[in-house]
Image (cartoon, rainbow, N blue to C red; front, side):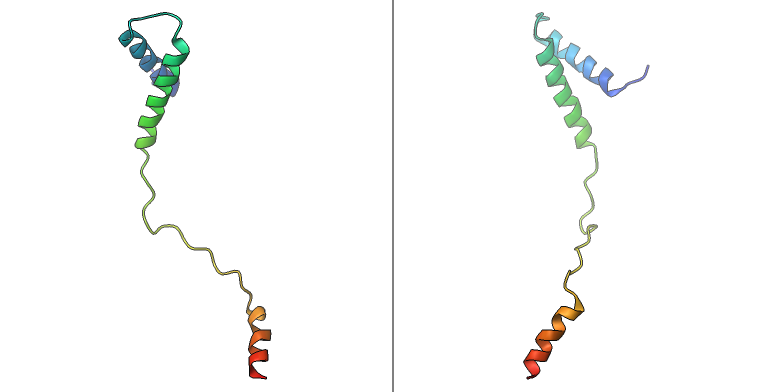
Length: 75
């Protein structure tokens, strides 16, 4: 049997429904609660990016922008 995301949510919603006394009319709430739980579990399994792997952006100053200031300082 394929264990897709929808299947996992359906199984969890059924378990929630059973735990709450199998009362009809609350399927949407059970589905949403199951969806939150399943997605939170899957998100927690995603490894965090390693520290220091992001690069800082390069400076956007152009070399020609510094030249007029340097010339004015010499005068």
